[in-house]
Image 1 (cartoon, rainbow, N blue to C red):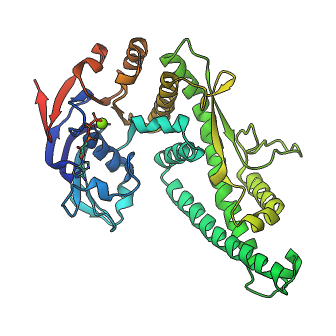
Image 2 (tube, rainbow, N blue to C red; image 1 turned 60 degrees about the vertical axis):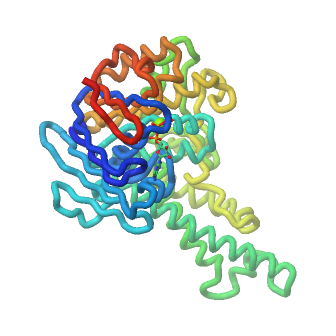
Length: 403
Ligand SMILES: Nc1ncnc2c1ncn2[C@@H]1O[C@H](COP(=O)(O)OP(=O)(O)OP(=O)(O)O)[C@@H](O)[C@H]1O
Ligand SMILES: [Mg+2]
C-alpha cells in the first residue's frame, strides 16, 4: 500500500499542509525543528491512533487550535480510500472513510498500515521492559486488531485487582495491629464481599486474559526471532548475532508437560496450559502480593530479552549497535506485516545520520524494494544515493516539492 495524498489542518506546527505522494522513496529534508517528523507522525497516527512521541493527544493539535484533522488517500491494490481523522484531545476522535462517518473512530485503525522507525525507538534496546512489551503488543494489535481489546481487558483487570490488593494489604496491616485475625483464613472468613474471595474472581479474569496475551506474545517472538536476526545481520554483518528471548514471570515449568510456557526460555505454549499455570503462580505469590499490594506475575511484568552474542544488548551494545538492533526490530515487524497482507508504508525518521556509511548502504539496500518509503533527514547528504527518489524541502512550516 502507499499514501497518495496527505493533508493536515492544525496538526502540530502546521495550520495547513497538502502534499501529493507517490510509491517508492520520498525524502523530507530540512533543518531541525521545521516540521519533518510532524508530517510522518501524522501518518503514524492515522495508522495506529497513537503517536510514537507522546502519550496524549493534546500536543498533536496546533497550539491555539481546538482540534486537528489528518486526511490521507491510501492506495491498496489499485483501490483508493480517503481516510480522515479528527483529533479531539480529551474527547473521542472522529473518523471518516470515503466521506462516510465510521461509528467508532478506533475502527479506522489499520486502514493505513505503517511501520515507523524513529530515534525514540532506541528506548526499545536501552530502556525499561515496558518499552519492549509495548513493541510486542503494538505489533500484535497491528497484525490482529482484536488484541487491542484483549490488552485493554487485561489492563482493566490488572488495575481492579491492584486496587483490591491494596485494600486487602491495608486491611491486613490494620488487622495485625488491631483485633482482626492475622492469617489469610481468618481474613477470608470475614464474610461475603471480603477482598480475598473477590480476589479469586479477579485471579480467574487475570489468568484468562493474561494467558491469551502471553500465548500471542510467545508465538510472535518465535516468528520475530529469525527475522530480527536476519535484519540485524544484514545491517551489521560483522557484529555478534542478535537474539530474542521472552523472559516471563511465570516460574519455570518443572512438571515437563511438554509446553515450556513462559519461563526463562519460553517457546510457544497452549493457552489453557498457560491459564492454569498463571492461576497456580498467582496462588503461590498470594501472600507476597497481599504484603506489597501489587500483582507480581503476569505479562505486565515480563520482558523481551535482547542479546548480541552472549551479552545483553542493554548495557553492553554500542550506540550504533543499539541503533541497528532497534532498526532490526522494526524491519522484522515490517516483514511480518508484509507477509500478513501487503506492504505497509515504511517510515524512517532521522535514521541515516546515526549510521556509519556501510550500515547506511546496507539499510538502503534493504528498504529500497518497499512499496513506499518515507524518509526524514536534516541534510540531503544523509539520504543514501541508493534511495534517490522524490524530495520535499521542509522549512518554516511549509513543505515544497523539489523538482
Ligand atoms: N502542538 C504544536 N503547536 C505548534 N507547534 C508545535 C506543536 N508541536 C510541535 N510544534 C513545533 O514543531 C516543531 C518540531 O517539528 P518536528 O519535530 O517535525 O521537527 P523536525 O523537522 O523533525 O526536526 P528535527 O530535525 O530536529 O527532528 C517544533 O518547532 C515545535 O515547537
Ligand atoms: Mg524530527
